[in-house]
Image (cartoon, rainbow, N blue to C red; front, side):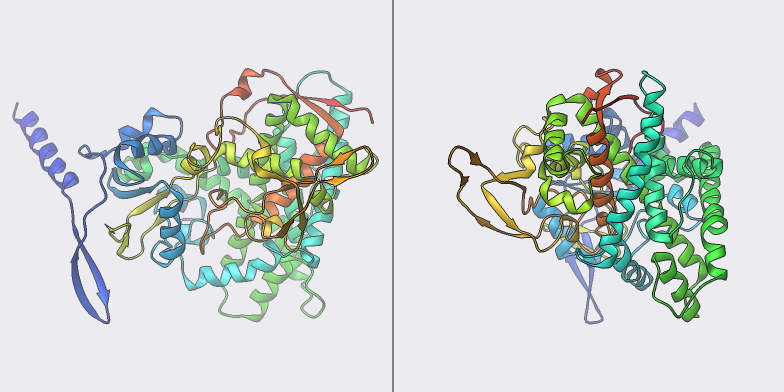
Length: 538
């Protein structure tokens, strides 16, 4: 009885600690500490130790649970997850207030143990998972020219060339496989290897044999597992004392990352570093990284290696996104028919689809955007690096801020029939576009437009249909200073790969029921659904 009494007392004390409202926010102004009273955002009353973690287990994705809680507590609410004080932001205006107007206060990332394990014990080695710093700014500036190039630049053109070349290689593999079987196939590993070759070819002028290179296959699998891992949530993220129970899992993460790093060094970096030409024109992203390392003694070699690893890992986004697009076509035959008709009207089935065709394939592009919306990939949480105020509520330093992209992508407030997969929501009619920038330069279209009457001939009417100029509540790559710098690579390479597959194959599902459940994230498990690929006759 005495032991039970002690446990009850401890629980009550913990309950008081966890439910206490801290309404005092310290703000610093001109060297003086100014005490100001700000109320804390409303939210559920936490339980001892676990906080409100139990409330997130009711749905497949925690962001779905956040959306449910917002109906009770409002568009901004606080929630205690284990030992972490968190804030959830659920509408466009508040998201802009956090990431744009107050972005300098929210440049941190969560200090999850898993993130450290993936980057040699320090998540700050990663561009996506590090806290904002001068080093982070320098790394982004170094990468921008190659990983976020503007349209009409040589690097943008090279993305298109590489994407088309690797798509043709993929098609040859798929034709060979489908010629020898009438069964459905596990296409995802093939997409992932093709996407990895796109990235390694473009960034490092190196590609690998997807049929015979066993080590390459293993590394692509590791990257795919990590992409899934980063998009999941675990109790240990918020209850670090559970770490001993996750020992094997953490060891697995460390082993994956070590294998990847060894591969990049031995198969990509080492030989190039030995033969580095510092005089001629810059060959690619790796060339630029190694020249900086050669010229600047203040740059650490690990910084360069981790940067390359981070960006090469972006291929996982492409492979998973194309898989979702193929699932959409298999799920809805009408979507596939419209894409095929659009592509056939441009290529006549006589050549591969290229990046330059994108302007004339708006429905194909819209299908990719709708796949992003429909899956509603989560935005990596931010962390307050100093006290701040959002919507009149005090936010303490260290607060984890969840940007609820799921709400933006599924709410009837922002979309008509959000549960329906409909690429047409990204199109507008009776417009002619004067293209100046690509979709990817700013995350969404930044082209100018002008209205025009429907073009008429003697016996027909033509209607011009284009991707929308801007949908302000569609933020698949986030906004603010931490917006995804690799979005150009993801959207362009996904477009070329997806369009070429659809041009050559009719896509059918092995089991249509597998595809009817709405995905909770762009990341799909490594072992996912099979598809039938039926060669088309042109």
